[in-house]
Amino acid sequence: MSWEALAEHQKTIADSHMRDWFAADKQRFSQFSLQIDDIFLDYSRNRITEKTMQLLCEFADQQQLSQRINAFFGGEAVNTTEKRPALHTALRASKHTVVKDEISKERARLYEFVTQVQQGKYKHIVNVGIGGSYLGPLLTTHALKEFAISPLQFHFISCVDKMALDEVLTQIDPETTLFIISSKSFTTAETLLNTETLIRWMSEKLGKKAIAHFVAVTAKPEKARALSIPSERIFPVWDWVGGRYSIWSAIGLPLMLMIGSKNFDAFLAGAQAMDEHFCHADFNKNMPVIMALLGIWYINFFDAKAQVIAPYSQRLRYLIPYLQQADMESNGKSVNHQNEQLSYHTAPVIFGEAGCNAQHTYHQHLHQGTQLIPVDFIFVKNKQRNEHDDMLFASALSQAQALMHGMAHDQAYRELSGNRPSNIILLNQLTPHSLGALLALYEHKIFVQGVLWNVNSFDQWGVELGKQLLPEILQQLNGTISGDASVAGLVKEYRK
Image (cartoon, rainbow, N blue to C red; front, side):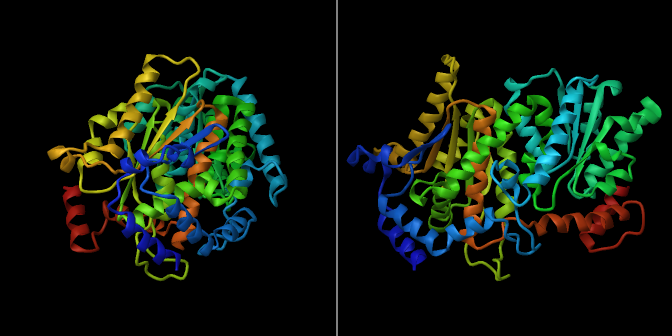
């Protein structure tokens, strides 16, 4: 019934304009904003009323969101197709969990290794991985560079483009380089090919000593040992940790090496603080739930198909691809838990750009295009505020205001009608704690939307299908050509 009530409510406010709501209600900002620890959310520039939020929260209740949150944190098999829990939140929990001792033991090993590396001969760290094994370490090491406690230089190899790999090799010295091979399954074709190439390259430079420069992070330690990586240099990723949620695990080793164990603990604590808020706050004051409900509102009742992430912080420029994977790989589904075809849209297309650059590229489409595209503006306050900070914040706020207000006269009104929604997320500072909270905020938003859409946010059969088709096509490049006419034709063109 709540879904139908929301559809009827949407019809009653569809022609209302946000600027009129602001003019009539001086309390709108305070009503639709909240602060959780280091994060302030202003969601007043949304096409909502108090009634809208009431109906959305009722819908969440109807879908038994509270029970699903409890099941998620309680370790139940929320990944129903693979019949296992999604316990990445246990990696940052300080209180008792069913896997606390196991986590503590392995984190102690990691922190001991971190100390050894920081006190040793290494100058370069090369992270070899793809997907969550790449995007999480890339984002966090760039975001928290100001918290580096060592002069280690970090490099990332993900795709199999040889030019990208060679570019890294020209920047490093084999004697002082540590390679971190991150692959949960240790079967990912791109990561394995890059690893084999790097082992050969290092062996040519250092001989038998080469393998001492490699460590592995995986759920399949026997596969890492098959490459002669010793057990003491293999760190686990458990089956109950999905790749796109793995930065809190040993996949975060590059970040640990850069900021040290104390700061990494603060990173975990920030995420845990958001976990606690998410578990216990009422839905109408629950930041991840509110953001999730707003997304549902636009995707399913305003036919929005995209979402912009606009961080006005150069340090957060890699947040965009990180959230693209987190959101679209989690909720980009067209069947529900009962394996029935959905009659409604799910995950939006996520795109974005850091800072003012976006204003001179795709923001024109946001203001005047035919599609309604909600925006999350993310801004980091600076203790030593300067004119650059002022310009950045004024730029973000002016874009949000222009999207909402538009131009209310004559021809310009038809071209710039406004009434386009956005959130503004303010971080007091960009610290390990606040970054942890920000990532957990989006994780929980994605989880809530998966619950309300009745999809499994933790499997990824589309990704797996591509992996299955790769070996067969790869074999054709140097063997017998088969398959449909398109594959056969393109393989022939490639082989010419």
